[in-house]
Length: 463
Image 1 (cartoon, helix red, strand yellow):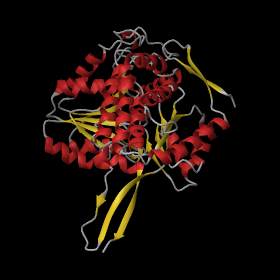
Image 2 (cartoon, rainbow, N blue to C red):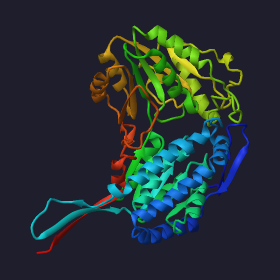
Image 3 (cartoon, rainbow, N blue to C red):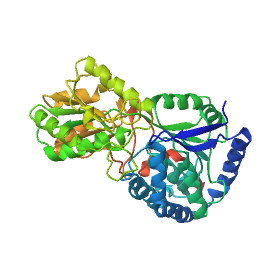
Image 4 (cartoon, one colour):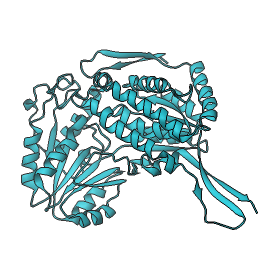
């Protein structure tokens, strides 16, 4: 087994980061420190925890631009967008979860009973292992890290090897904020080491964001212990444009929802169903707006579509597209319109396909790339049937002017989140969860704290 790894930048193929894997002694020290630190940390008040977490968030805001540049080099998102992962999404989620902690973690009283005092207290689980992906390394990890620490847990973060500097930034932020040593730590470890860490009795919960195959591996690793894992996995998120939709609004937002971050978003739009009355106009407008994107170096301010994270990821998506075309799909984007497109590199032009159907992998399996299939539907019933014809169930969006109809349809859609007239967004006040192969568990909202705490009942006879 190699004792180090390298982060190859999709920007130019250079080695951007090189790090050693943690040794067995390193891992033992981190686990021991996490366990010891948590026993003291859980005794601190929620107010003190909040003050420290707020200082850590401020570190992120103060260093947003330099962290954004690091992120662009590590995973390829255009520099015009990367700062907003920190200054918008990260800040919004962290602040919300900090603000609701005192109320959410407070004791739950039982109804009054003469001679007794009864209540339920939320206690921290202990040591939380957070396994974060590369595509939104700060946004995905903050969902677990901040509420875990606010709950009185200690945290060990393992970032994807594509974005190791993000873990180190967290450590710097919490150190500056005055978090006691050992409450937050990170480890650069490989898959085999991850499995061994999960098997250690000092780990009390695992928060994983990643692929379905990764989720199955985590579930296998936890199967021999009585602990749970939150699994936020893949998606093949659909959109349905009803006949009464505001066409321009739907086009603008669905193009963005499809191609932002080069389509590398678990809740990005991967398939679209459009009412037959709007289909031709929708497709025409969708293609026209797609052609306005600029594919190129993510270091340039004018670039709106950067490289995919790896050549292998682009190759996978290109093969999906080629297979669909062989089965009868029609591509509407000529790659020559995007001069930076080059097969055999991470630089992939966006693609829009029509004449697609559910026998094609492009409409069934996660692409995680700047490609989308668009189908015409006759009515709501056909749209719902197609939206649910998937092993995934993360989010779905309905584009309509009829709020009550959107709710009725949303009740029939098998997803964790149903949007109306928006997509590809996490509201921290709402539960972030998936069904089917999109995973299990919940982060964000008051409900998100439940997975990071255990209920303890106090039944006191006082009379």
